[in-house]
Image (cartoon, rainbow, N blue to C red):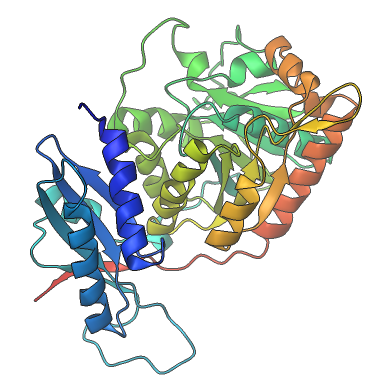
Length: 389
């Protein structure tokens, strides 16, 4: 009987988590076309014998799943800085170990090196930058980005919106600026398009509407560099308070490149209550964590629909975003209902946050929650990666 790779991954994940008794030990897994599974397990650097026992349990559990012919294990362990006296280690705190046996390519080793956070220069004219991200498409990430930007602008903040979603740049449509043609100023820099009190730039302004987007990391970063550093967002004397970046969905090449190369102060993860969406949230959080970008919190969209009688219906499940936020130790910033005015505003190019109504109040509250949590964050150094015998 034919079984899809997604089904195999789900079965292996369930089997391994059941064997370990804790879903937090399994970081990720991959299965190739030959039935070989690669498991990435989190280890406790202070109890390596227990970690070895867990690796044996995980391997046996994976091999018992139909279609799995072989299992490779990669163990990672991150020694976090604490107030306690650390064990003596030539590598020092913040070290991430990868066991021998899983051979990483030279490119993988290079890409896995810590992001030199302190050497990513801030962008002149922009005080803070946050990413609005989703681990999968179709969850309302761009809608949240646009309405958060507009809500903050209504509160008096100077806000910019950079649409980096190369695969579906929808910000121009949502702002009613699809026909805009950003001009170059006398200083040779792009002039952002202004609408609803915010400044915006989008890949959608720079490409033909029907042109297929087949860009990878280097091309994405070339466009992002121009729109980020070669644009008149603000000046050191009169800077933007906040630039919101609507990132590409998922954790692939484009999203990872942005997380590694742009001086982000934090990231907001957008999800729906559905299990299939929540399953990807951990991957999104892990991507930002591993690139030294603090995660501000989670925004759940499509949380419920309220019928004319006032009864709420959880069309896509209930409580998923809250449960995921609690499991990951992150704030749940908002649960956004399905409102007709949000959909109509996006389609008509008039964001719901700009009008007076329930949606405006919801997005205003969400924006304030994000600013409050952003103020609490402190950037932590990324772990180093070494091989151990």
